[in-house]
Image 1 (cartoon, helix red, strand yellow):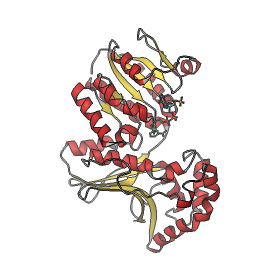
Image 2 (cartoon, rainbow, N blue to C red):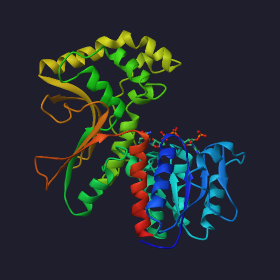
Image 3 (tube, protein in one colour):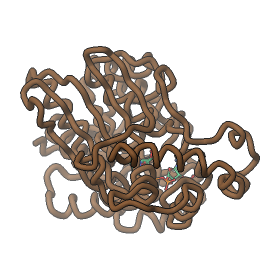
Image 4 (cartoon, protein in one colour):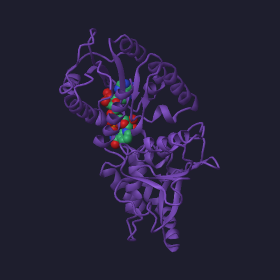
Length: 363
Ligand SMILES: NC(=O)c1ccc[n+]([C@@H]2O[C@H](COP(=O)([O-])OP(=O)(O)OC[C@H]3O[C@@H](n4cnc5c(N)ncnc54)[C@H](OP(=O)(O)O)[C@@H]3O)[C@@H](O)[C@H]2O)c1
């Protein structure tokens, strides 16, 4: 590992950003080499940085940022500022911003490495994906995004290792959304019964498992983005998260209602549709789950409801856990399975911190 100091720039200090800062502070204390120096931190409204690149104290960065009155630099200016830093720089993007994602090729071309849980860059257009990895290979800057799928679970690193060691990945299948996992584990539990669909959605929202408007989970796009990333890593040039079949669980009549609250109010009108999906599965001795799958040989990617035997690992999932099964030539008929919490600030930040350690060992 290099012993020259490394500058860290952080964009985004919300749930994941704050957890990352506390892990960074512990890392800097635990491993004094290379010296990690925080030189830039911003939210969408404020920023902290010094023209002489002097270090911002990591332990008080959040408080200082909230008391600050400096507006963030525009992204091209952030790149200019970081490119002129006296040491190597790693950008930590803890936002879900498309604008920040669109700037990755420019950061990388300037020699700035990137670690991020933000899915947008890797699940947007295929052109952006190519620009990012071309820029990285030309400049030598590194880019890692473990937490963009399954939060801190080793999903992307596992898939890369399978591919890089010459295994043949034939199929990837799993539950990729904590929200969908929680909803179906309560709506159609293995033990039978479960509440009405609309009541489960309402409960999930009250417990903080859904986005403020639950339609942002139920439209399947978040899962489609994760599948896009994995399919590309498995070698399929998927054009975008809307270029393959994605089943939305939003009844058509409620797609355009004005608010999330109105959506929840009217959802009971459609309970019978989901109830019949559940009972059809039950009659076959199965349970229904919302899954994503990639069939590498047939180059098909899809997201939606599937029925599973009650003995299947996907059927037995608990709480809001994710599960991802890799079927490969080496693993034969028993897939390699990664399972556990797929959301939460600390576990997501863990994936970002471990990506940072990889970058530090390579630059
Ligand atoms: N939370 C999880 O469990 C989880 C799991 C896996 C992946 N992720 C991913 O992790 C990322 C962060 O999630 P989060 O839960 O921490 O979100 P969050 O709490 O909403 O925080 C987002 C942060 O990014 C800032 N931000 C947004 N757009 C920005 C921009 N254009 N420029 C500068 N700052 C900007 C926000 O600043 P303002 O407050 O000023 O808007 C805020 O500080 C997302 O990409 C998310 O998908 C999260």
